[in-house]
Structures are given as C-alpha cells and as structure tokens.
Image 1 (tube, rainbow, N blue to C red):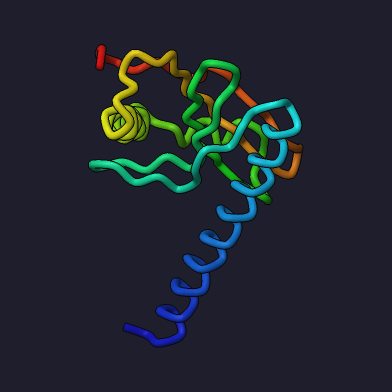
Image 2 (image 1 turned 45 degrees about the vertical axis):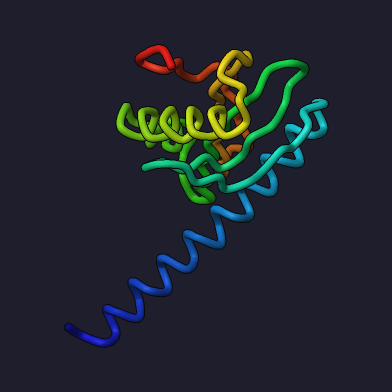
Length: 131
C-alpha cells in the first residue's frame, strides 16, 4: 500500500472524528439552551452507540449527531439508516435496563450540522419493535 494514501486515510479519519466531537459539543450546547439536561455523551451499549443522552422534562432523549461541515442540508439525516436506528435502539434499551428505567418515556432525535446550519429533528424515528 502506498504510504501517502495510508496517511491520507488516517488523516481523514482523524478529521472526521474531530468534526464529530465538535458537532456533538455544538448539539449539546444547543439542546441545553432549549432546557434539555445532559446526562451522558458517547454511550456504548451492546452493538450500538448513542452520541448524546439528555432529559427533556420527563422524557429521555437519545440523540444521533451528524456533522457534515461541507455537506448540504439533508445529507446527515440520510446517514441515519434503519441499521443505525436499530443499533441506537439496542444501545438505548441497554441504557434503560442498566438504570431500571424501561418504563420511562423516550424519544429518538437527530441533530444535523451542515454548512447550512443546525437542524434538530425531534422524534426522528421510533423503535421498530417494543422494548
């Protein structure tokens, strides 16, 4: 493998990771400004990860953040595929089980950050199956 190509791929991954962290911070600040209470970031459970978990009143909100600094509006939303939704649902269930909170009201939101700005989609999807 060409070392220049390998370095370029590593640099690209690092840039995406840094962009993702910055996007999560921006999304968390935005949601906190709306009155949401942050609980945790980058939760890993089972085969999934949830970028942000917050509380909106009595509702636990599981948030996927898609930061696309050079992308057009809608590109990040398209990246939240049914497979990604399933993995998020598995992680959310694990989070709720760990806290004996399966009866809590929950919601899955997506925050997209692009060159066009920040878009918050409440209740972006629902779990395909009951807990």
